[in-house]
Image 1: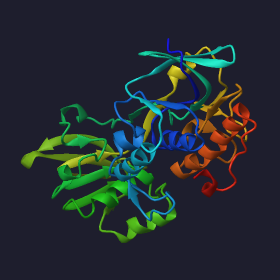
Image 2: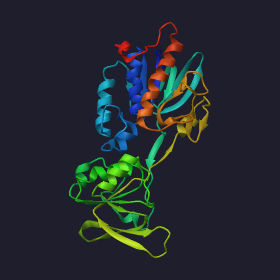
Image 3: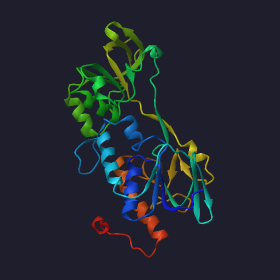
Image 4: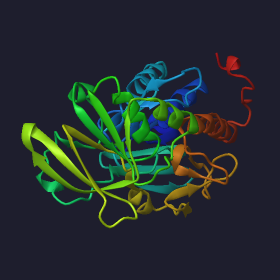
Length: 329
C-alpha cells in the first residue's frame, strides 16, 4: 500500500473529472484522477468525439474531441497523478481518511469526488428483424470517424439532442442524410431543432424501424412502420445507419463499496455543496442528484469549484477560498 495520502481523489476522468483535477491543482491540492478507460475523456471521448457541443461558455460550438483535447492541455499544467485503466472496486473509511482500492492497488485520500457520469455505459442497441445480418460498418452507434460517412447515404435514428447534432454534423459530409424518429416532435434544444428544420436533412416521422435487409450496392434497406397505423410502411436504402437511442448505464461498482452512499434513480444524492450523506465524499456532473439539476456539461463544470472549495475549506480551514478566479494565479 502506498504511504502517500492524497487531499482529493477524483473517480472518473471525463470532462468534469478532468476540470476537477485542474481546479484542485489551482487550490494546490494533492490529487489523483482514477479512470477505468484507457484514456481521459469519458463518454464524450469514447462515443461522441465528433459531436458538436453548444453549452460550453466562450465556445459558440466545439467538438467533443476538441473539448477533451483542451481539457487535457489544461490539466497538464497541474501536478497530479492520472491513473488510467483502473477501476475502483471498493472505498472504505480508514480512521480519518478513505482507503480506495482499484484493480491495480490501494491508495489513501482525505476526500473523494465521484465524477463517473452515469457510471458504466453502453449505447442502446437497435432492436429490429435482420439486425444481426448487418455488418458493423453499415450499422454503427458512434460517429467517431467522419471519413466513414463521406459521400454516403446515411440514416440517423433517434430524436434527442445527440441524434439531431449528428444529423446536422453529417449534412455537409454525407451525400444525403435522413433522421428517423418515432415521434413528430424532437427532444432537442429549441435552437437546434430550428436548425434541423432549416437544414437539408430529410425528416422521417413518426416512424419506427421494424427490419433491416442487405440489398444491392452494399446498401441496407430500412423498413419502417408509421406509428399508430397497421399498414403504413416506408423503405429507405442507405449506406450507413447511425443509431442514437441513448445509453444503458449503471454504477454497480459503487454499490459494492463499503461506504453506503445514498442514491436516487442510479444517481448520488448530494447537498448544496455537492456532498453526499458521507462526510468528505462528493459527487459532481451527471452523477450528482439534487432538485433542479440540469444534466449538461456546463452544469458539471460549475459544480467543480463549489466542491473543491468546500473540501479545501474543511481540510485546511485557515486557507481562505478565493472570491474570484484571478485570485488563484
